[in-house]
Amino acid sequence: MLRAIGDPALRFAEDKLRMLRAVRFATRFELKVDPRPWTRIRAMALEITVVSAERIADELRKLLVSPHRARGLRLLDDVGLAAVLFAGGSAMKNLPQGLPSAPTGNLWEHTLRVLELLGPRRRSRWRSPRCCTISASRRVVGRTPDRYTF
Image (cartoon, rainbow, N blue to C red; front, side):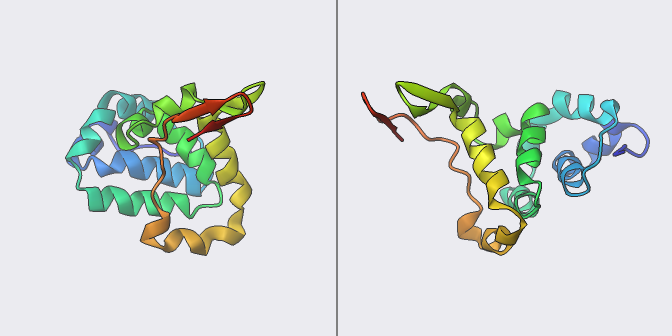
């Protein structure tokens, strides 16, 4: 069980990056999370923007090398950090995935499924800074009767 020491609001106010670390620790160690810190993270998610991009990128890299990286992104989404960190990420939920005649879901779930299928053997590829960007701002730029183009 992941808990905050003392008052979660005070802990996260001391260092906003702790919100992202809480998600990473819950992901890496497959922990359940005490509702108090989770509620606080939801309330403070927009404040993550005061943290330097380098520190945020480092935490995201560590989250993405976890074999449970898809769960980590789901948790980021659950607490509202994904919407702040990945511009256009919420738009992925509204983009259909699959053939127009037979959609198989949305682009967000497809992306999470791809991350699940990478498996633990692909960890080393995520270590390169070039591989740590999530293209969350995909847009539908074309649609024909047989496909979507992003």
